Image 1 (cartoon, rainbow, N blue to C red):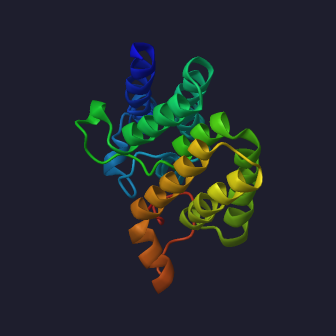
Image 2 (image 1 turned 135 degrees about the vertical axis):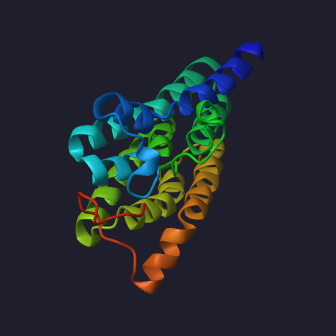
Length: 202
């Protein structure tokens, strides 16, 4: 039980690492929280600084969800993996290293968790995200469509109930964190994804 608890707590601490803040500070000497939308996630980094920083931040955000969840599954079973993944996502949204202030919207980190818990549904969701993004050029819309598709794909692929429940709750959380994006999409004012200062929301 102690080992399981440490894995879950470790998931939160790893998830709290604000890679968007760290990489932008190291390589550009700036604070990503003062750039673009102010979000610390990969979308804002990519829009503001391009793929050279956006891709590494995205991969690291995925990894900080994938590693705790995979360790949890291997050492403690499905439920521990789910809990470790959930705390990693919570850490990304409210990172302790930033004083529990606003973090990212959990999409990349949640994708990493899903990849550890349900690889096949996760791979299909990557295809869904990419297809939606290239069709409509809205990162937010791609994330919302993927968040809705993941629990359905987990059911279709016969994943354990813990994983299905987790993906449903995580998807609801992604929708909540994107509530302002949803409002802008409905109004037709959500900016399409482009690099540079023209896109200021995430």
